[in-house]
Each structure stands twice: as structure tokens, then as C-alpha cells.
Length: 150
Image 1: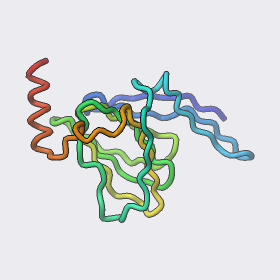
Image 2: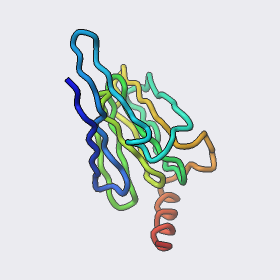
Image 3: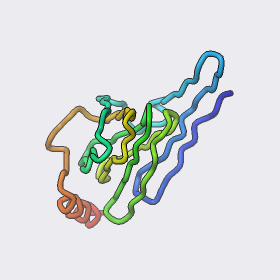
Image 4: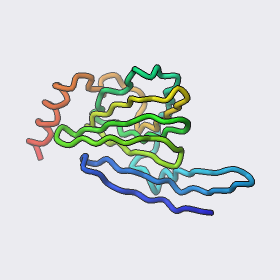
């Protein structure tokens, strides 16, 4: 059975939810597809995975000034909280057919990782420490400055 891709928006500015195109084949196994040109507003420049996260720990807790990211929990589950300075939403990433696009200037945090969770992140840019905003109050100030310019 082939299921087509579905993309939805949410209340957090620019965040998009993706149900990926996937094939369910109970004889040979299942396949999930990310078509970069059709589903992502960037060509990934970096891919990384987080795994073996203790269940009481969080990851992320930062925003990027320029880097966009696409997150898929390929195994197990974790929760993703996104925040644009005004709106917040939380999603359970619990299947390899579901991804979330997190654009720049969105505060993102993952938590409630299952012991077997493997989170894959496709990033629009190579690692650049100066692109990170690691303090939430600094993030709010930068969001306010950006919004005042618009």
C-alpha cells in the first residue's frame, strides 16, 4: 500500500508537520521517503542522530538564527516542543514516517526520550556555533528585534 505525503502547518510560525510518503509491504518490509526537493525548503548540509538519551534529559533547548532542521524519530519515540516566542506546540515523534520541519528562529527542545529512541536531524547548514541562541531570554529579545523590522 502506497501512502502519499501530507504536509500540515501548526500555530508555531513556519513549523510544518510531514507525514512522509511511505510504502507498507508486509512481505518485504516498509519504506519511508523524504523527497528533499519536494518537502524541504533546503538541501541538507548535515545529518546527525541523537540516541541513548537518559529518560530524564532534554536535548536541543536552543534556536538557530539561520539553520533550518527536519527531525524524524527513526526508532522509539521522543517529544518535540517548538516555540516562536508567542506560540508553543508539542508533538510526539514516534514513527519513521512522521517528520517536523523547524525553520530558523524557532526554539526547539526534545524530551521524554524512550530508551531506544533514535532521532535523525537533517540540517540546512554545517555546524556553526555562532548560529545558536542558547539562552531563552536572548531568543525572545532577538525574535522581538526581527518582528520590529518586519
